[in-house]
Length: 151
Length: 239
Image (spheres, each protein chain N blue to C red):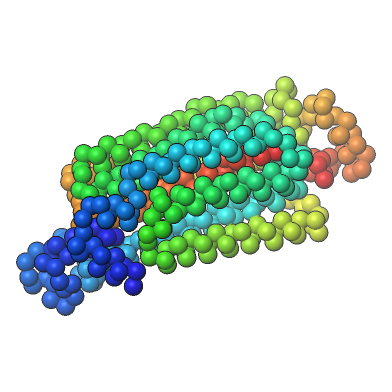
């Protein structure tokens, strides 16, 4: 349907009309400049302490998603493309988001599970963390120190 | 898409020849398979297939991102401490290299659809070179530095004495090496494909009527860029 409309439009094509439809070098360069700017923003924002890793992560993910949308819409031509291609992208990203969201929501309700064969790395505790390590060992015994470190 | 539509229009003398297209003058594009009505349909079908493949790629990396998120929530202190061992400056340089390479790739698609052979070939080799810069930084500066300090994945995690490390950091480095490694593998595959495209473009195989491989490998390359757009802040920056 959409392609037919384009089809008809481009039968009496002229270069300008075409450029307008598909972006072209100028628009692509503008998108690149925006992407580079947003990269600087991401780095700058990561220097700020928001007091919560959750907020910092959400901000970083938001900027990343804006960048991803620009790449998808313009570099991957989704803006001018058959809608079905965009649907495939959005559906797969949505499914991944669901997987992550429900997994993270469930975190609080589960114990730490380690494979039975797991052996904690030995002798890597520096003075900075020795205190924390001692505290953990008191709780769990020497053997299980590693896996419950930051519990 | 529209370029191909235009080419078909010209090739078939201005009428959409569905049933008897091969009879007349122009007799269709040599790249057209007999089971497609026209080049536009063939192009759209190829692209749909590529997008389905990209969906499987997203799900592949999605699983790793989910694991990363879960383990970060679980071993928060370790992940926070571990990410300071990564050099965000190198990560930022690599981000810039990939973003610019995405731009040169989309320019290659643009030029190939215009039939500008020389510029297509140039854009493709620049894209290849930027991919090489990315891999060079990863393999020469980043990975060896981690290995030197014993910051390895899984059971190989054995930090040097002067490194302040928590035991659970092995988890972070497992994800770091698996995710950036899988991503780097995709970059290498992409570079090989782009080199192949550049050689084909040099031979003059692409033009207004047919540039599907450039377009599809372009999509793949942009997806590799997309994944890095998420990897960079999550691994290198957020704490």
